[in-house]
Amino acid sequence: MKLTFEIEPVEQARPRATRMGKGIRLYDPKKVSIYKKQLAMMCQFKYKKEPLTGPLIVSLKFYRHVQSSVSKKERELRITGAHRPIVKPDTDNYIKSTLDGLNGLLWEDDNQIVKIVAEKYYSDHPRVEIEVQGVKENDNS
Image (cartoon, rainbow, N blue to C red):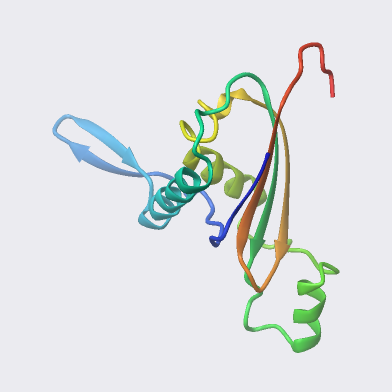
Protein backbone atom coordinates (compact mmCIF):
# COMPACT_ATOMS: atom_id res chain seq x y z
CA MET A 1 0.00 0.00 0.00
CA LYS A 2 1.27 3.47 -0.92
CA LEU A 3 0.04 6.79 0.47
CA THR A 4 1.16 10.34 -0.27
CA PHE A 5 0.49 13.13 2.21
CA GLU A 6 0.77 16.63 0.74
CA ILE A 7 2.30 18.20 3.84
CA GLU A 8 5.69 19.66 4.73
CA PRO A 9 7.44 17.10 6.94
CA VAL A 10 8.12 18.27 10.50
CA GLU A 11 10.78 16.80 12.76
CA GLN A 12 10.01 15.48 16.23
CA ALA A 13 11.39 18.02 18.69
CA ARG A 14 12.18 17.50 22.34
CA PRO A 15 8.99 17.37 24.39
CA ARG A 16 8.08 20.38 26.51
CA ALA A 17 7.16 20.04 30.18
CA THR A 18 4.74 21.82 32.46
CA ARG A 19 3.93 21.39 36.13
CA MET A 20 0.55 19.91 36.98
CA GLY A 21 0.16 20.13 40.74
CA LYS A 22 2.80 17.75 42.13
CA GLY A 23 3.47 16.10 38.76
CA ILE A 24 4.89 17.05 35.40
CA ARG A 25 3.11 16.71 32.07
CA LEU A 26 5.11 16.33 28.84
CA TYR A 27 3.71 17.57 25.54
CA ASP A 28 4.79 18.13 21.95
CA PRO A 29 5.78 21.61 20.78
CA LYS A 30 2.96 23.32 18.84
CA LYS A 31 4.55 22.83 15.40
CA VAL A 32 4.89 19.06 15.95
CA SER A 33 1.42 18.75 17.44
CA ILE A 34 -0.15 20.50 14.44
CA TYR A 35 1.81 18.28 12.02
CA LYS A 36 0.65 15.09 13.74
CA LYS A 37 -2.98 16.25 13.78
CA GLN A 38 -2.90 17.24 10.09
CA LEU A 39 -1.24 13.96 9.16
CA ALA A 40 -3.89 12.04 11.11
CA MET A 41 -6.72 13.91 9.36
CA MET A 42 -5.18 13.23 5.95
CA CYS A 43 -4.75 9.56 6.83
CA GLN A 44 -8.38 9.23 7.93
CA PHE A 45 -9.43 10.74 4.59
CA LYS A 46 -7.16 8.52 2.44
CA TYR A 47 -7.18 5.29 4.45
CA LYS A 48 -10.67 4.26 5.52
CA LYS A 49 -9.85 0.78 6.82
CA GLU A 50 -8.96 -0.73 10.16
CA PRO A 51 -5.35 -0.16 11.30
CA LEU A 52 -2.89 -2.73 9.99
CA THR A 53 -1.85 -5.53 12.33
CA GLY A 54 1.18 -7.77 12.53
CA PRO A 55 4.79 -7.02 11.60
CA LEU A 56 5.26 -4.30 8.98
CA ILE A 57 7.93 -2.99 6.62
CA VAL A 58 7.69 0.77 6.07
CA SER A 59 9.37 2.91 3.42
CA LEU A 60 9.27 6.68 3.93
CA LYS A 61 10.28 9.48 1.58
CA PHE A 62 10.36 12.99 3.00
CA TYR A 63 10.31 15.85 0.49
CA ARG A 64 11.18 19.27 1.91
CA HIS A 65 11.40 22.77 0.42
CA VAL A 66 14.67 24.00 -1.03
CA GLN A 67 16.09 26.86 1.01
CA SER A 68 15.56 30.23 -0.69
CA SER A 69 19.14 31.31 0.03
CA VAL A 70 20.76 28.95 -2.52
CA SER A 71 21.84 29.84 -6.07
CA LYS A 72 19.75 28.90 -9.12
CA LYS A 73 22.34 26.28 -10.08
CA GLU A 74 22.34 24.71 -6.61
CA ARG A 75 18.54 24.85 -6.51
CA GLU A 76 18.37 22.87 -9.76
CA LEU A 77 20.82 20.28 -8.40
CA ARG A 78 18.64 19.87 -5.32
CA ILE A 79 15.35 19.63 -7.23
CA THR A 80 16.76 16.97 -9.61
CA GLY A 81 18.04 14.92 -6.67
CA ALA A 82 21.72 15.36 -7.52
CA HIS A 83 22.18 17.05 -4.13
CA ARG A 84 20.21 15.59 -1.23
CA PRO A 85 19.49 17.19 2.17
CA ILE A 86 22.40 16.58 4.51
CA VAL A 87 21.30 19.33 6.86
CA LYS A 88 19.08 19.33 9.91
CA PRO A 89 16.49 18.14 10.64
CA ASP A 90 17.77 14.59 10.93
CA THR A 91 15.94 11.84 9.10
CA ASP A 92 15.24 9.95 12.34
CA ASN A 93 13.36 12.96 13.74
CA TYR A 94 11.14 13.06 10.65
CA ILE A 95 10.52 9.33 11.11
CA LYS A 96 9.53 9.67 14.76
CA SER A 97 6.97 12.45 14.26
CA THR A 98 5.42 10.74 11.22
CA LEU A 99 5.15 7.26 12.71
CA ASP A 100 3.68 8.63 15.94
CA GLY A 101 1.16 10.71 13.99
CA LEU A 102 -0.15 7.58 12.23
CA ASN A 103 -0.46 5.37 15.33
CA GLY A 104 -3.92 3.91 15.66
CA LEU A 105 -4.83 4.94 12.11
CA LEU A 106 -2.53 3.29 9.58
CA TRP A 107 -1.20 0.70 12.05
CA GLU A 108 -2.18 -0.17 15.59
CA ASP A 109 1.17 0.96 17.00
CA ASP A 110 4.52 1.80 15.44
CA ASN A 111 6.12 -0.97 17.52
CA GLN A 112 4.81 -3.31 14.77
CA ILE A 113 7.38 -1.89 12.34
CA VAL A 114 10.24 -4.35 12.00
CA LYS A 115 12.02 -2.65 9.08
CA ILE A 116 12.23 1.01 8.03
CA VAL A 117 13.77 2.60 4.97
CA ALA A 118 13.72 6.40 5.03
CA GLU A 119 15.04 9.02 2.63
CA LYS A 120 15.14 12.84 2.46
CA TYR A 121 14.77 14.81 -0.77
CA TYR A 122 14.27 18.40 -1.88
CA SER A 123 11.16 19.33 -3.84
CA ASP A 124 8.96 22.23 -4.91
CA HIS A 125 6.07 20.13 -3.61
CA PRO A 126 6.73 19.14 0.01
CA ARG A 127 5.16 15.83 0.94
CA VAL A 128 5.56 12.55 2.76
CA GLU A 129 5.31 9.32 0.78
CA ILE A 130 4.71 6.09 2.71
CA GLU A 131 4.75 2.54 1.48
CA VAL A 132 3.67 -0.18 3.92
CA GLN A 133 3.76 -3.93 3.48
CA GLY A 134 3.05 -6.77 5.84
CA VAL A 135 5.68 -9.35 6.65
CA LYS A 136 4.77 -12.89 5.71
CA GLU A 137 5.44 -15.69 8.18
CA ASN A 138 9.05 -16.97 7.92
CA ASP A 139 10.01 -13.94 5.80
CA ASN A 140 13.57 -12.92 6.69
CA SER A 141 13.89 -9.97 4.28
